[in-house]
Length: 211
Image 1: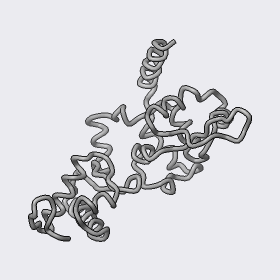
Image 2: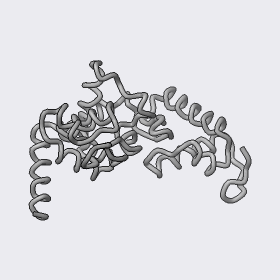
Image 3: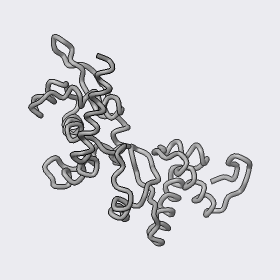
Image 4: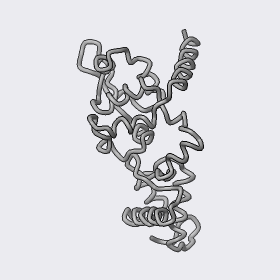
């Protein structure tokens, strides 16, 4: 690394690690390795080495944070080791959770994309219009093309925001559809019955405004 970042200051390795940690903390969202290289004027190997060092420090101190690979980049998050304690203290954050119907729809699209609404409906056995519209609004899916049929039905695929939402590195890291881990994976993002009823009520109110 060179010492010309921002104001021609020379940084020690500890300061480089502190600076990288601060950058990830302030950003809040994943940074690609290329962006981090540009910001820090460093090579890919140097940035990855700093991240490994920081995580090693975190593990040694049983720290409350961790840097994880997300959506092709890196993100500073709370340490998964303390997930149960944080959930007991603060509950699950509603903004990171979805109604079961949306999770079902999203899982189908994620594993079989690109898909039309009609294909999703056949698998679920019910209409997925509301779920698809909600997922589009959250930018968890987008229209990635159209089916080769008479009506040119839109094809839906997951987005980079989907990877960020579930904090996974790439689509290859999704758990197997047939595994128990899949149910555990989705349960962390599912609203409970009361919260889902409240969410649906709010959606009905919003829809009635535009009718």
